Image (cartoon, rainbow, N blue to C red; front, top):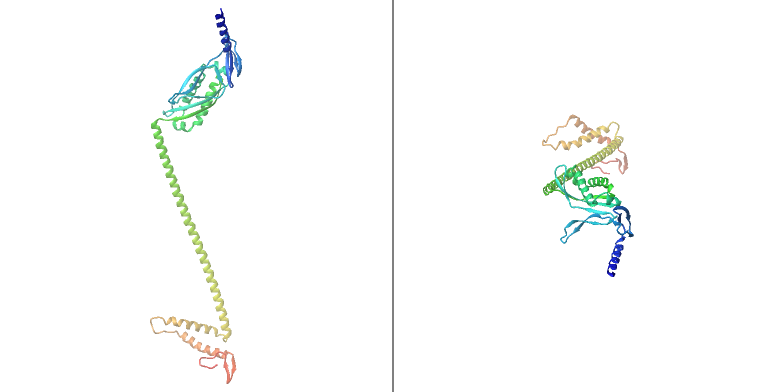
Length: 342
């Protein structure tokens, strides 16, 4: 009798212990009463009615690494629903682009359970449903674009995937926060072709850059030569102007000096004799040049002999016109002649 009573007490204690549930922060439990949804048990101490209420089990999927470091997907069940943001990562999948290139794409999804009741009853396996929806959506989006656009439009693909998945999973009580493409791997031959194309493009850009640099250098050199020639011409122009101004000033000064000399000669000579005097000087200046030729005979025009005679007359005129001063023995002219005593 005591044994039976002990067994009953132990069974009751076990049932009571199982009916007490302590739920952690950011976790909930969906409680069913007689197989129907009753409530959502929040964090803290919760007591379930034995044999009448029980927690609802849900499916979960997560990555697990073995001793070799290889990651694999592990599926299990749990009664606790995590309300924190979760990461759903699944292996890469082959996707065919619009230009019939098969590429492997690895995607990752970030989601959060917003309604535990819908996440439990609206879909049978929430992680698997989200994974399958992500795969099909990715195939549909990438199948409409070519390889080059796929490689260059990750943001566009992420945005479209998030919009489609969020619209489809809104009835599952799930809030999809982000969908990202982790890696896109084309086939090996495509990668080699892309590398060759990239190398050729870089070589082309280098050639264009060198050509532009050579062109710019030639332009700068020609502009420099042009500027140097312009400045040289301006310098020569300024120098020529200065030389011309100097010659003009010199000629004006010489002309003024000659005019002043002619005025003084005209003032010193009798009227009408200044021209004869100047003409005689010109003949005298020209005679040495005429005698520099190979011939020894110099022919003078009749006018020249007349001028030379006029020069002798000018000497007499100058002597007559020169003022005289008294010296012992009589008056002598101001300009004594050669051999005459002062």
